[in-house]
Image (cartoon, rainbow, N blue to C red):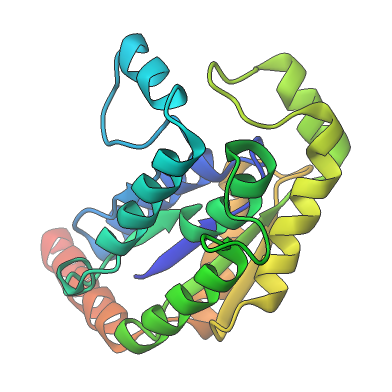
Length: 228
């Protein structure tokens, strides 16, 4: 599977990605990890120390922009797409939404303008992995605000005044995407387990690749052999 999962902070993208990892292992076998490290200061795998978080936050907008640009380019390398499963949360879509709003770079018309950059990245993905599915996880502004109050993120980005703007921006990017394979899910009043059921139905109906089908067959054969 090649999936890109996007949505506003507190919509539940990380929770859903973890659930999809479990679903992928159960359905196809193997591991189906996610690269979920795109929101500044969460820029690395594993845990950073509080001092390291602050060092990232203290970088100038220019240095943050350069780091993220190279960070994205690194994740477009063929070595990632040579694996049958390469899944991302946020990625360049986080950049186009949060860069101008919170990081101090990436606005329309600037050298680092992310709106143009994201379309270029999509062109690369369309060639390297045309089977990629872009998933928009939607959520109502009211529920987003409830989650912000109930369980605030330690290094959260989203501000109350920006909720509608951020949700609309992700939807605009989803609608403007040149990636052909897309689906939407909504976490407003649906549990993560129900979202997985909805994802499975849509994915199995429209987005299975030949490799996915082969793995399903092998998985089924192994189960049948085990049950004999």
